[in-house]
Length: 253
Image (cartoon, rainbow, N blue to C red; front, side):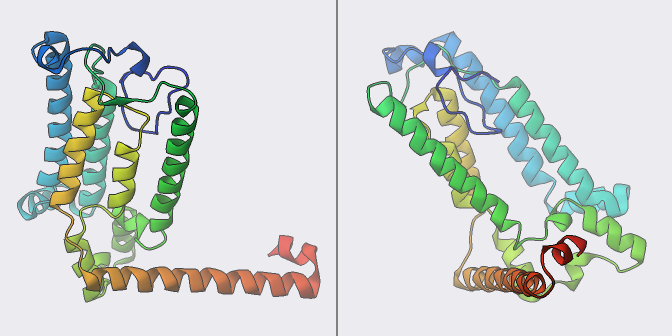
């Protein structure tokens, strides 16, 4: 994966070309015939295709049955491991396009200072929202940890204990942070060809499996309100404890 030049914002886990080395004056026709452009794009396309195929095929019912027969309760953990491996391969072998044109490049004062700062703020907000979504979704179950824990206690599959509305939501949602990832992919001060390929393919992939409706949004809102209510009660109880017994009681609890 290419390293960003000094002063270029690089969001975490997303490959970005060294923009300072790219040539913005290259003609599109010449660029699309240049092997120095086509070769890295072909490699990047293969890496994205590998990740998409792994992420989709292993989620099908047929492959799930096969992996369950092989790994049992570790099926979800095996899926997460393969996803992490595919993502690591994508980041490790990503090829930046150093000699292609740029779709946009903020390089004039004062925008070369303000636009990266605005992108940083937008990315920071997006990642805050992504982590807040963990309050709604069962992160331990998504990682496969809860399945093993329930199996050890003899409680069966945790998904079987979820409500019909929750199962319906999971069937409609490819990824719980759809809009936030789109913001991270596209809100950049400089867009090179390899970054365009990455953002375009992931946008298409996320859009194809995103089919939430009004009932799903109402369920998400109800779950989020419920989580905030629980946290507010805990904070109020902690405040009452401090008011009655002082800071020492808070440390002991």
